[in-house]
Amino acid sequence: MLTDNIKKYFPWFKNNKSWTYLDSSATSLKPQCVIDDVTSYYEKYGTNPHNSDSKLAYDLILKLKSCRQNIASFFNAKNNEIIFTSGATDGLNLICQNLINWLKPNDEVLLSYGEHSSNLLPWLMNEKTKKYKIVYAKDKNNFPSEQAFISSITKKTRIISLSTTNSLFGVSINIKNIVAVARKINKNIIIVVDATQTAPSQGFDFKNTDVDLFVCSSHKMLGPNGVGILGGKFSILNKFTSIKIGGGSVSTVENDKINFSPIPERLEPGTPNVEGIIGFNSAINFIKKIGIKNIIKHEKELKKYIDQKIIKIKNIDYPSYGTDFPICSFNIKGVSPQDLANYLGNKKIIVRGGMSCVKMISKFASPSGYVRASFYLYNTKKDIDKLIYELKKYKPGNELKNIV
Image (tube, rainbow, N blue to C red):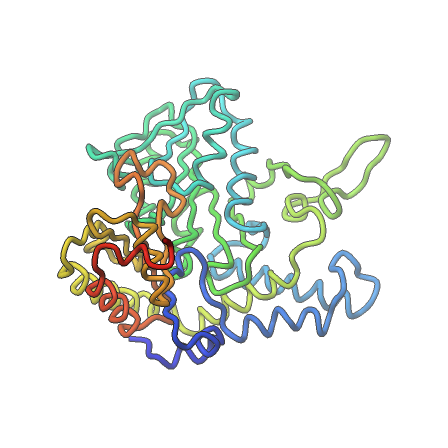
């Protein structure tokens, strides 16, 4: 199991010694090496990568190419299969805005009630105007299980877009099983994966899963905010057009005819988030140094530990029991999750209360949501002990302190 020594790499703990951070599913903390590498861009380069007219600027271009190659390698993808975006939301919108133009009336897009807003709203907003049909994969309790997806695939299914790990309950789906069934039923199905929760802890093997498109965000993987990737098969990306247009995305304009740049430049208009890409690359290197296998082992031990402790608390509702992933959602019966999260916040424990961006939660779980505690490689059993201690101390009415 990873030790407290991991925390020494994260300045947040030095600056917030009395606080406990249990909200890594929302965003992760950043190691010093990432912060230093972000700063290094401003201190050492400062130039625009679209400018290659000096050695310094050209060195930056080479550095960004190296970052793309390293990040692509981490996800088992090729360089031209990685598009830098502002995050998973940006990537999913780009995917949706392109793929909906490929759909015919009554084609089916398979989602679930458990999808994050970023993988729900773009499809939902365009359903009526484009006249495709959204189908929700669900079991008898409306829960988005692996089998629910498999049993919902038909010859009308044109797109499957799903999260590999649910952001509220931490339930993971074996995407390879879904892909195998989908390819047999309809070889033209396009499979989109939101890997934002899975990638930080388990990585994501693009080639091995055989999905068509995937997204993830840097900020959940120890990297900076405002940068992420859209990964995809080149044969599909090469048919995409950007939903924005500007510098870099166009090679020439002749007699009012726009000639677009090749992939990936075509889908990366404007000056890129240079410092973000450099920081993301640094975060990937840190994760590789720690080792995915070590992170998985560490998080599984933490998850088993909290499972054993939290179910002993009186009046606890804990739907995350028994999952491997380090996302733990719970309620104390009769208490608003927002109020309980505020109570824990007053005890200097950072969690999240509510729907956690699962907007259709009322279809399969508590409509007001849950308190979500989520862990990462820098968390320890001591952090869980503090959470359990404060939950055991809780008495009805405590949640109203500092509110009324």
